[in-house]
Length: 464
Image 1 (cartoon, rainbow, N blue to C red):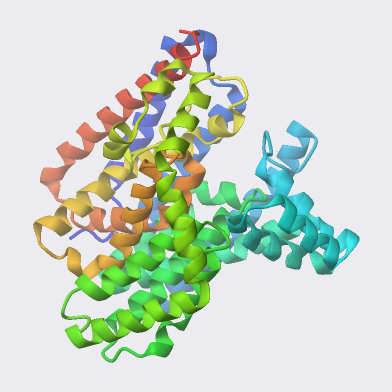
Image 2: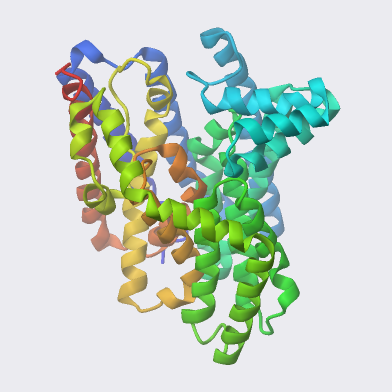
């Protein structure tokens, strides 16, 4: 069993990125990725794969306490450096400390600032008039952060760095409990180095907080399920996390509820006895309906009832800019759901954010092969029931995305990215020499897919 991410994999992944980007640039020379986004992508890929290999090997010799301190401090420093750099980068690029085409960032910022500028009543009126229910949680959180120092986005983003560094430790505990010490360390380092997490620390969006709630929910609920004697009080934090998620993204809160219920019902008998499953399941259902259950059921029912119309309207809207969007469907996205979105390696008008994250998405494309391999091994060895909770939450949410308008939106994938990285870490631990050929085949496939994606983005707009 591997206890580190092999240098063999790292070197070839970096080479694969460079070759793919070079081929895309040569094939579509009139739409070469701007140099600044090439730098972002190359630095992200090199840092991730180089240090994923070095740190999983070098930090393996430290005891648990030292390792956790190193992960937390390193994650915090990486995020703080990125946040400060990107703050001034955005100002130089857009004139504001927000990402390109700020969209929701501008709305969240304006609503949250109302409390500080005009008082609580004005804030409350604004939040109810301009936001859907599943956006209110983040604006409340942001407004509270702004109260002491004013509506300065840098303060909120520094707090995000601490929150996300703590997520690294929670993921380590979760992965260690499920798959062992070495896999826990690989998972924590993967998330520590993941550029997608850096990006969301540097913008005024709710994804970092959502990811934290997901990891907190799974880690604490999983701990309760694995304890020798399950106590109701041990489920208070998971239940509170799922209730909080209702005000961040209702669909994800619904999946969290369903995942925990499924863990009670079909989880391994080594975790819970049958009578415990029945009693705790009943208590959980009653608690949910007494608190947030009615709203959850209504929102989830509306989401499911409107799934076809929202997907069709989304594809129709995209077809206005890309003619291929009309052929997109759940049947196409489903087999690719662990891998997408593909990397944006060509220069497309008004897609600066996607181009900026070309390297981060390429890393996810590569690691998704290890995630899929891990799921295959769990099914083959019939050990999946030992990990029902994280599997159900990750899989359930991705299924929701398949039937939504956001299947190819990296932002909507991010809240469960940490769980995907945990299973990718387990996939690494199960790799043997005979699997190296599969890894190479996967990289070739990813390279071809990204080249085709570049052609689709251009041809669908009549540019290629």
